[in-house]
Length: 560
Image (cartoon, rainbow, N blue to C red):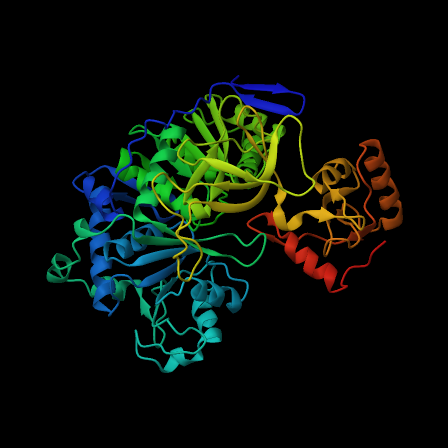
């Protein structure tokens, strides 16, 4: 067994990262890497739910047709286009097509809870065009959403939208082919505008500067409204190469992706590595929580799985029901959230040949995976070690120190020889640092432990720092609750433990007494108040603590 299990620690002794200190970056654009493999008839991508396999040549052909179609609608090189979709083939092709046309593409989750969310993203990236995929069975949902933002769409010629709510937006493209709406195109109509002559007249990508803006990624919105960050061709391509090198991807790799393509670092890794290394990327279904993940792994004999804890847990339920074994898997990479020992041991049982198991950190601002574990990393505590290409620094946090480790707010350098373009809509910060906002511990061995976000730091009424992550860990042991978050509205305000009980017939005062006793036993400070909620606000499984603060500040919670 590759996993070494100790008390509160799990190590994967066989996962040794390949060193990147001799890394030689490619000075190329996104279209250039596609054309390097365009003559190959090998399958580059497989989308199981669509029963579609795309060869390298087919990707090139579709990319060029879509690029020519976009330019034929009046869009120009340098314009920005937002693509909101799940894991479907056309998300890959349209993004590559936009890049081939010289446009800047952005990626977003299509499951908008309100039109305000979509409007915010379109403004944050200053997009001129948008492609909307339906997130569910209601194929008209994207059109209804757009009408809430821009009712002028129904009376606008295609490509001529003019609305005060979105001053830059002119082009609306709906991915659904069954319904046509005024003022909008379908994807097939864009493809239909391409001709051989228009394809031949596409911009000369070989003359482009690899350091120009190529793509826009969005943060999840777990600590506030999603922010837009810009990445260059150089940063995206070489960020993907670095991650692939550290993971060990090569031409024999079949990478099954259970993470959403709308996360830009995920897209770069799984969409670019086939062209960089002749690997194959496969997807079980569009949903960001794929239910058929394990069946897809078995069908395509995947060697590497890229997932998070939530998607993997869902798949593991099948194992315990149907006793499925997946011997083809040798590498499992878990990104985006903490994992526990039980999950890791279950992976070891389902995938008996998975000798290489790692965790890591996705960072939108870097467009890659700047932190990844190795065989010295406690997988249940740390997110890994920084890759050599992303040097880090820690900004001190007032009254927060450790004797045997560095502690502070994590900042890292963007990819070697580049600048951080910064936040949209301008993307002209050109900084030497990326401030992540995460408060972390950096151990002498080089591992990173994330404690909290800087906005979640608590100072009590005596101006003493409250290490609330320790409170949460101590109180999480209480069997009567499913979850706990400790927070305050502002420095000096009461420290409140917000809990999700297992039984809503509980008596909050009794729970508070029990939780306080757990804190005394763990020698940590006590919460001033306790509040009860049925669940925490979340985005992509991440708890939105800032929304809990807003609810608390609005006096919408009963305090005990």
